[in-house]
Image 1: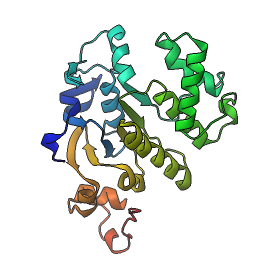
Image 2: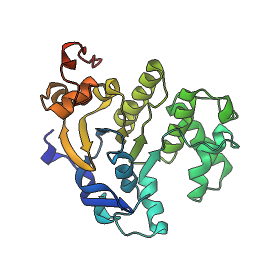
Image 3: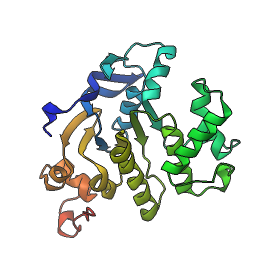
Length: 266
């Protein structure tokens, strides 16, 4: 389907953000189309995490606009943003689980915050979320007893328990071995294919990019440097993109003679 025929779910225009003298985002324009998996790449400190926090209203722009499903959320109050966050959920880097809560209590937290009080309804929805992330029967476990991959799955279950239209993922592969990272990729694509959930994923795991992405956004120094498909990324001769994909520093002349080509896993 051509881009012009796709429905914009999130539209960002002229987004600037700064913290004191640090100008983090410098006029970002980007769209997220309904039902796609968009992967955001770029070096550390390029503004990726700051960008996606604007997509669910966790940050307000210094300048610019953020529109979600046709609604300008740029200056909404915290109370009105609660409705937005039921549409656009976030899986935080590291999972951000409450260590004193059981798995079930962690997953149920956003439901209770949204005003759901019926214990049977909460239990049903927690069970469904655990089924989605392939952890049935693990409600009473504590975060301290979970592996890194299991913690990520519980964090994902918490993100999907309200069945949002979109999930934002901040480094879901961080700290995971390749096999566990692959299982997270499968969950992300299953959410897209089986539940029509839109995914926006920040990652440094290049194998995952070629497994899950429909489109790729590359950020550099707080701007959108490049947008394209995974195949276009792999074929690009642009030095900045090629160096990133190959894992080369830009000033390491001659490294391409010995650096192997990336295995995209396709």
